[in-house]
Structures are given as C-alpha cells and as structure tokens.
Length: 181
Image (cartoon, rainbow, N blue to C red):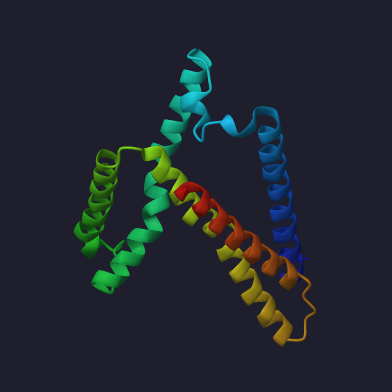
C-alpha cells in the first residue's frame, strides 16, 4: 500500500507526535523548575555522581561518533563546489580527507576561541537546528503536495506543511531573539 498520500500521513503523524512530546516536556519542565533552569542540564543542574558521569560520557561518545555523519553532506557539497566532482571517488580521496581535516580544525578553533560555548550552541540550535527540523521538511512536504495537487490528487498535507514552516520560522525568530537578549 505504498502511496504519496500514505507517506504524507505518516510524516504528519510523526511530526505531530514529536511536537506533542517536545511541547509537553518543555511546558512541564518550565512549570516544574521555572526560568532558572540552565540550558545545559547535564552541566549545571545534576549532582556529581556515577549516573551523571555515565550520562555525560554517553553524550560525548554520541557527539564523537555522529560528527563525521553530520558533516558528510557538507563535505559532499563543498566537494561539488570546489572540485565539481564526487569527492568520495578514489581519485579525490586526498581532497575528501582535506575537507574532513578542515572541519575538524574549524571545530577546534571555534571551541578554543569562544569563551561561552553554551551561548554559541544555543544560538546555533535556535538559528539552524529548529530551522532544519521544521522549516526544510515543511518546504519539502509543500513541494511534494504541490506536485501531487497538479496531478489532481487531493492533498490535505499542504496545511501541515505550512504549519511546519510557520512554527519553524516563529521558533527560530523567537529563539534567536531570546539568545541575543
């Protein structure tokens, strides 16, 4: 039973479920602890014990392991831009590894140069993270529903796409404003 309509429904249900869980956690956390909660809960609000140490270690391991995966698309795009070729091919192995090393040096430089890394992480999350999670999928969903509407298929997911875009843009604007104050 594969169809665009079924996939659109699955996307909308998944986003709705994630949104309900995120909003519930955020609202309940704010009601329980108020505005005094630090942005990095693991760094400030937890006791110093074995459980906290394990949680911090697991987050560090996750970041270490996911770094190459998260930057893979960026390295491919830069390879297309600079070399006009697929840098994963064997003849571009040096270029690909140079881009990888460049990302690592840039990350190291930022982490050394920025005094309040938490502010930078929060600003990046507000400006790019929310935008990536809500706006881009909303734009893609809208584009697919526009194509489906052109073929005469009735798509209710266009409303969901516009909702994702509006929520994403509003959250991005308010998040960045909050971080800059």
